[in-house]
Image (cartoon, rainbow, N blue to C red; front, side, top):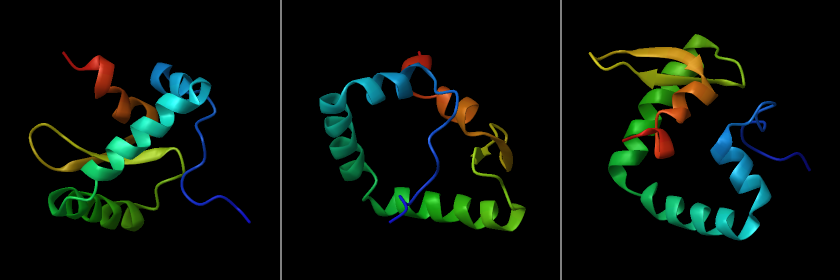
Length: 89
């Protein structure tokens, strides 16, 4: 059976490489994120972005992200997600 969800990036960033090489850390990360993503606020946020993404016909390596002044845009999944985590000060 085919795996559901987006395809792994062909050129992963530092964080993605770390979790691919450290299965125990990945398990903990998935567990922590699962709890965080259950909140109604996060569900509504994802619903809004998916609605926009479906209308735009974005490719598998693209995300819809919020712009600082409001509104949304299509951009690469890698650059969108790089703004979080270790990149954030």
